[in-house]
Amino acid sequence: MLNRIRVLEAGAQTTVQDLGRFGWAHFGVSASGAADPLALRAGNLLVGNAENAAALEMTLVGGAFEFENDALIALAGSDFGAGLPLWTPLEVKAGGVIRCGPTHSGARCYLCVRGGLAVPRVMGSASTHMATGVGGRALRTGDVLPVGDTEVRQPRRAAGPPPFPRSGALRVTRGPQAEWFGEELYRRAWTVSEESNRMGLRLLGEAIPSPAGHMLTEGVTLGAVQVPPGGQPIILFVEHQTTGGYPKPANVISADFWRLGQLRPRERTAFDSVTIEQALAALRAVEEWLYSL
Image (cartoon, rainbow, N blue to C red):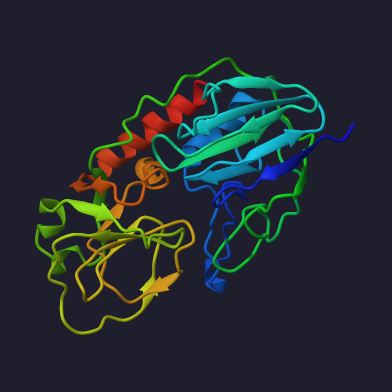
C-alpha cells in the first residue's frame, strides 16, 4: 500500500533534499542538496536507505507531518524539540504525527523515512534549489509527499550522534588567492549574519584588507571563502553561484561541510588553517564513522 506523508505544518523552510545534482556547473547550476550531508547520509543509513535517498530538511523551525501508514523514520542533525531521540530508527504507526519545534542547537534536522521520498528527479536529483526553483519549492501546509520503496538493506541500530564537534574553528586549506592576504582571516572571530542563506554564509567582523583592482571571473566551489571589497568574508554554500570574481584566501575542508549546515544566524565562528594531509585524515574519519552504521 502506498504510504504518504501529509504536511500539517510546513515550518520556516522545509524542503526535499538528497545529496544534490552534480555535473551541471558548466550550465550555471550548482549542486544544491542537503546543507548537512553527514546528517542526511546517516539518517538514510539508519532506516536502510541508500545514502542519497530524498528526505526532508527542516531549517531553524521544524514542522508537523502525518503518516498515512506505518513507517520507519530517523531524525538526524539538530535537536528540534520533537521529544523523540535523534540518530536512531523510530517506528511511526498509521495516522501518527511527528512534530518538530524550534531548533535547540544547530540549524537543521533531517527526517528520513524508509523507502525515501518518491518525488520527481530533475536533472538527476530530487533536491530543491531554492534560488532557482529547480526541483521544486519549500513545502507548504497541505502538501502530500509519497514514500517510495527504494530501501536497500535492513535498518540499523541506534547510532548516537557523530563523534565530531559542531563548534570550534572551521578548518580550511589555502585558496587560490591565499598569497594576496595576510593572516587576518585566522586572527579574527566572525559572526554569522542574518542575511545568510543557502547561497552563502555571510560573516561579520573586523574587515579584512582586500586587494585593490578586479580579478578575472573564475569557477568557484562549495566552501570557498570569498572576500569582497568590503572585507567581510562569504562562505559559498550549497546553492552558490558557479563563477565569481572575488579573491578566495581559503576553502572549508570537505569534512567540515556538514558544520556549515548547522551554523545559526548570530553564531560565532573562526577559521583554522590545516594541510591537505590533515584535511584528508579528517574526511577519512567521517567516512569511517558512516561506514560503521
